[in-house]
Image 1: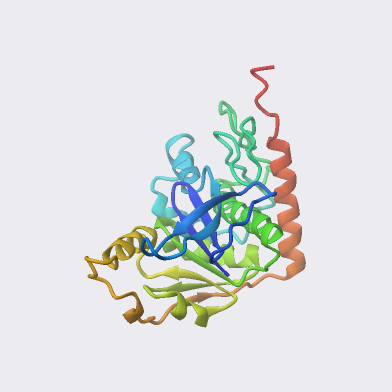
Image 2: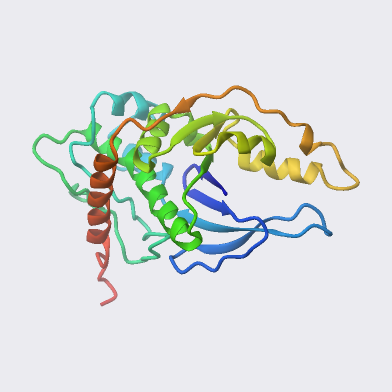
Length: 271
């Protein structure tokens, strides 16, 4: 099984499930992944969406002035070894998959905002909050992966990533750490080529691979045929491997879940 994630202002994650539809009982959506021609069988996927991913960094820049440019997030966050036990749940418009809580709110304790951060102490700095915003993307990805594995009963074997946020090497390393698999930079290739990278997460050299894939599928259609999908070859890739223990990973994820629970029922304006 292949899982693909597009990391941008929002995050979308798909579990491509060959020809069998799976009805989610854990907060995901069943969708059509693709159909390569009118005579081909459709290929289905489970989809999970995160409402706020890269947009949380824009909020840190524009609303509370913790950074001047989003491109600084990697270098700034690298100057601290962790978040200082700070957890940022960026639920500005509620939580999407797998929670679907419209009344959730970000839990980051900063005055004069409608969001909150939990775990702040007198030692917390802006760098811890910036790093916590990056980790929030990774934790939300794990939330969806956990739901997908429960629905399908098949452990993660590959995670392919694309989108503008994949240029952030620290984020890719955090993603590998917090989901427990390798994150690997990859290229254009076919499903047969992807099979060589089992148990890895894959980041493409071209960041907007979702759009490119749609264009390639259209270009390979009968009567157009400007792409030959079988001729695409893999190219060298970088790899990010988990550096933390399973115990640490699970402990941090447990605290993330605690932070998420604290964001529920935060908006009681309709009560």
